[in-house]
Amino acid sequence: MPTDRILLARIGAPHGVKGEVRLFVFGEDAEALRRYSPLTDEAGKRTFRITALRPGKEHFVARLEGVDTREAAEALTNVGLHVTREQLPPPDNEDDFYHADLIGLAAVSLDGTPFGRIVAVHNFGADDILEIAPTEKGKTLMLPFTKAVVPAVDVKGGTVTVDPAEWASEDEPPPEADKA
Image (cartoon, helix red, strand yellow):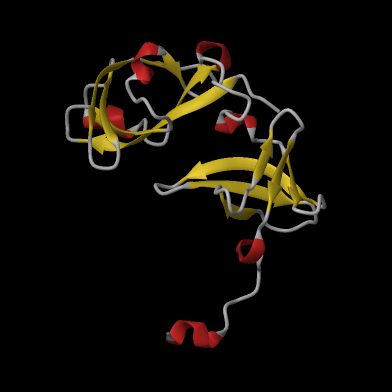
């Protein structure tokens, strides 16, 4: 269920007082953000041009055209920077995909039983996490996007195979688990 807008980065908190922002890049090549300029917000209504980019600690520091104060930078906190799918190169091979391609795919267990539907792909600073709305009513589940938990992805077939094991358990850990 591909989308026409691909999230490449998210603006974080301001960096300093002159309008620079922390930038969290969701790709291997942060400099590519400048080649895809202008970037847009999710709705495609606001545009952003990166005029300077340098590595920071666990993020990048960016200067955006027209953002010259801390207050202006603060107003952009959590804004996603997107491009249209047409601006990106096609994946190198059939096993490659963009995270946006996963959203909406059916999740099935190892035996093919329906498990749910992917509603989001998150990265909170460590590894990627799939958020899955279960087939049965209930709260969404967060599963690590690792080969052990997600052994197969078939974008063309519209499914991902999941082995949730203990990750999907809603049981509380036994009280003695805290006494280790």
